[in-house]
Structure formats: C-alpha cells, structure tokens
Amino acid sequence: MSAERLRPDLVSVNIAINSCERASNWELALRLLESMHATSLQADIVSVNASISACSEGQRWAAALRLFASIQGQALVPDLVSYNATMEACGRGHQWALSLHLLQEACSAGFRPNIITHNTVLAACERAGQWE
Image 1: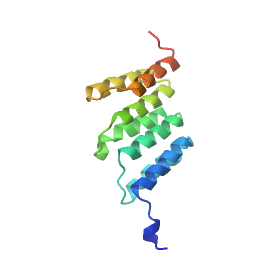
Image 2 (image 1 turned 90 degrees about the horizontal axis):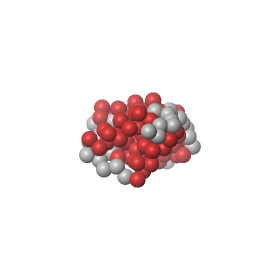
Image 3 (image 1 turned 180 degrees about the vertical axis):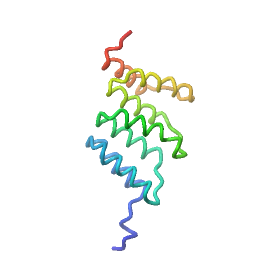
Image 4 (image 1 turned 45 degrees about the horizontal axis):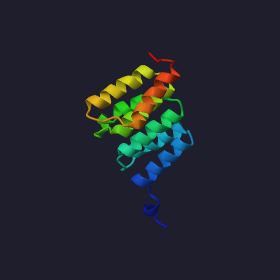
C-alpha cells in the first residue's frame, strides 16, 4: 500500500474528532484539529464544531470559547451548531452569562434559535442557579 492511500482526508479527521467528543477526549480532539493546520487539510466548520463539542464534554469552556472566536480567523462562518456547542460548553462551566451573550449574538447574526438552543441556554441558567 502506498503512503498516498494512508493519508487522512477531511472526512476521516472529522470522524476522528467526533469520536474524541464521544469519548470526552478533548485534548486529542484539539491535537487532531491542530494537526490539520500542519498538513494540507483545511479544517471546515464541522471540524471546529466537533472540537468545540469535545471541549464541552471535557468541561473546558474557555477552550471552546477560544475555538469559537477562532472561526472567523480561519475564514469560516459560524453556524447555529457552532453557537449551540459553545453555549453548551459555557453552560457546563457555569458561565451562564456567556451562554446568554452567545444567544444574543446568534440572534444578531440572523440565526433563528431552535429547541436545542433554548434548552442549552435554559440548562446553563439552571446549572448556575440563575432563574430570575
């Protein structure tokens, strides 16, 4: 088998990052995302969203927020999944105010919050005891 056949492509790396999310292995997810920058692979919004979700699973809200902030620097456009995943990470880190800020930002960007969005923000407030 030639080395060319063994080269990962975008889909395989995204699947690997998604697997890291499911295994709560945020560190490996971030290493995989970073390794894309060192190769000819260009991360897409799926790559970044899966990495944000992995950070959320690993209770790393600040890392998720940094990834979200880096989206535009990578010439990508955040989608509602980007916002939802980052709000979830902030909520798990008891950063309810950041979740609310991201909700406002998503709405300002023209996104229509869905049931996942609303449940994510409500859960963030609940975790922090912010009911009023």
